[in-house]
Length: 263
Picture 1 (cartoon, helix red, strand yellow):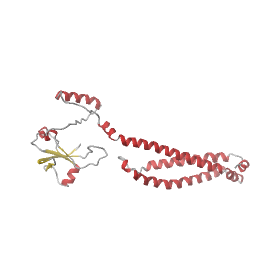
Picture 2 (cartoon, rainbow, N blue to C red):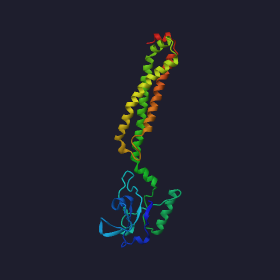
Picture 3 (cartoon, rainbow, N blue to C red):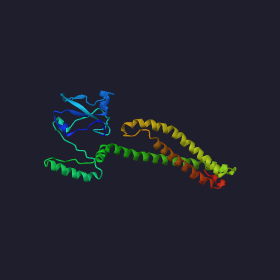
Picture 4 (tube, helix red, strand yellow):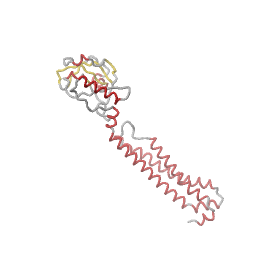
């Protein structure tokens, strides 16, 4: 936690008779506003008679979970309140953290052979474990999203292919009357494109509106991911173009007389 003002704790601060505390930005804003909190005194709710002098201000940080909202918080030296409870030692390393963990364990055993050292893990591991549920939901949502897009593409391809195939008689008539194959292709593609664009115009805003229902389940991102919605729309357009082009191109290569007899 970066120190923004004041000083850090020293070895002298571990004395129970010396009450000091470091507060975070949120606590400084809430209780002191624009005033300088350094040197002011606060009282602990568990022991109202024990005053603590504010000696520093640190940057806000999430304490228990990545999902929590940062609130007012203060920190005191471990032995100031009697040294009761479990201590967590946080070590910053420049290299492999697993190699540093063994060295920290040796140093702890050298200080006190009876001191238990357990639950040694990296911050990255803790972060991964804290968002495992969200990661699982995100993976399942992604899989079902791809499945839904695939089904939509298959249905769109099937409908447009069938529709264009049914228009073989119309294509033959246009070719017999002198229409060029590229004109017929563009006519068929334009009609299919119009259907897809109408569907996207309705489904796009509906998808953006529906993201409000899942916004509470997201972490560190907005619900309306316009890039994803745009990419899905482009995929649907590509599928529509392919579904329209292949049967229409096949129909333009058929002899007009044969096409006119086609049902």
